[in-house]
Amino acid sequence: MSTIEQETETDEPTDESTDVAVESPGDRRRAEKRERTQAREDQRVDEGISEHEETITLKVFRYDPEVEGKEEPRFDDFTVPFHKGMTVLDALIYSRDHYDSSLTFRHSCRQAVCGSDALFINGSQRLACKTQIADLDAGTIRIEPLPHQEVVKDLVVDMEHFYDQMEAVEPYFDADELPEDELEEQRQDRENREKVKMSTRCIWCGACMSSCNIAAGDNEYLGPAAINKAYRFAMDEREGEQRKQERLKIIEQEHGVWRCQTQFSCTEVCPKDIPLTEHIQELKREAVKNNLKFW
Ligand code: FES
Image 1: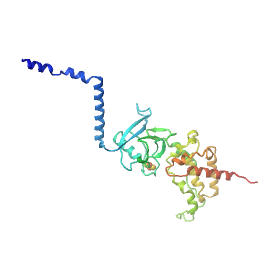
Image 2: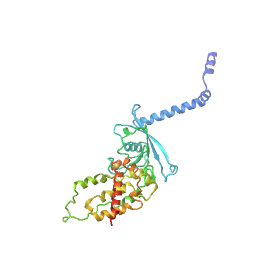
Image 3: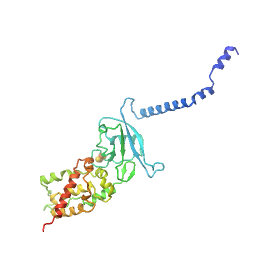
Image 4: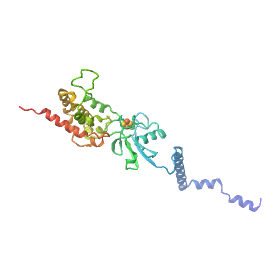
């Protein structure tokens, strides 16, 4: 073997020397960082998100008492491509369909009618289907279940108690007199219709109840939604005076209208703009008038 050949062989780096260089802590960190960046890039490509596309981050509350390792409440982050007109519900559906099919939340009509997707979004009770992402200030959108309700799983809360309170005010029309012809419409005069119009818009979403400090501290308080429902029928003249008295008795009870401290939180969060606090105050006045006695 010539001298030149000998030198060439000697200069070649051995596998051993290469390994030593890669395993230095700095190199290892840089290699890991490169891998993470590449993995993120691959994920974006898989999801069809281009490099220049605008994205938003959802921070979503997660909790599943029935699955081992998920019983502890936590937040998961989801990066979602943003498009004009996108609602929080759209972003949640994207996250469920692209990242985690176990992500659980309620929704149905997607047009602020069924009331099933009331959530705590960026610190306020809102309908996910009615909340435009473009209208939210924060770069990261924090999504939690409605406060003051028991969480069943992820963003789903137990609405049983809320429905019980609604039932307690007998939320159905009970006419004083029925028309002779059963097919005849039971007309309401225009002024009376105007008076109850806003109260009929309730979609039973529970946002008001969740925002109410009094309801949070008094489990028996009827709450703004139920009292609004009582208002809707107590003020309907077609039910007659006697039925109105019965309805006032229900809302006058210990955990009825007098619990309200006029904080307006229910009115602020109502997605249907119902003047809930105003209705509660009006029923208080009716209750006082009802109890005045003149000898
Ligand atoms: Fe029905 Fe939002 S999905 S109110």
